[in-house]
Amino acid sequence: MRGRWLIAALASTTVFGCRPEKNTLAGLQHSAVVTARVERLKKTLADHEAAVDGRPIARWLMPPELREISGLALTPDGRALTHGDENGEIWEIDYRSGILVKHFFLGDPTVKGDFEAITVGNGLVYLLDSKGKIYSFKEGADGARVKYNYFDTGLKKDCEFESMVYDARFDALVLACKHDHDASVHDAIVLYRVSLASADSTSQLTKISVPLGAANGGKSYHPSDITIDPISGNYVLVSSLEKALIEITPRGELVFGRPLPPGHDQPEGVAITKDSVLLISDEAKSNPGAITLYKWP
Picture 1 (spheres, one colour):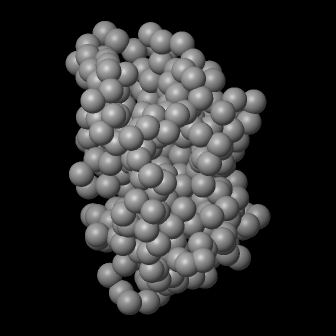
Picture 2 (picture 1 turned 60 degrees about the vertical axis):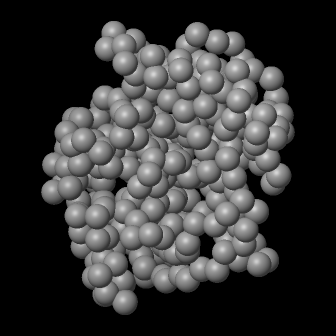
């Protein structure tokens, strides 16, 4: 990709934008549209009365290349990374302005797989597939092809996964089961912590079961992504099937369960920024793929 993409926008004070157009980097950096978007977001976040009714503060519509947008992750310096569903292709998105900054590729040729989640930790990016295989690699420059390592968690027989986040407190990757293959598990979320402290990460697995009780209206819950609230340190999970958010403590205590606001066709990714913005990514269904921004909490 040469230059950057300016993503079409829908926000509480705007209308649908045009199809994304390719622009030069210099042009976008000084674009009045980009400047206006950033300033509007700053103003909304500073207004304690704004967006308290659950309405989005911005929605960035994805180009066709990201119609199957999946997980979301934040780098230590606050940049957002995402990926598609079938290829090892990573994109950086400026969530403040709606710019696709860059993309790079995993392997040469590009690795294929059913990729479901992404996270960042210990100077590496981690990409998870639905069978519990985890790829690790350095972040690449725009258009680069990066080398990778991978290991198999050995959890394919136990769970189907779509969620992963790095937890520095345990130096571990936290995976949430979407479909638990243990027939004895009911009305609970099952998490696994995969320690990175050992060369053989599969030798250090911790399993946590979180009873849901009355959360989510008594329904089952199938996480499609997980993130960490930078303020509370709690885990926040989103579900594409139930279209709901659930928050739990690292010890496995339920904090809350609540439905997402209307307008989410298939929520697949979640992240919470240090400036208290909740990001939700949606795969394209009746609407284009999108990333929606809310004030958090």
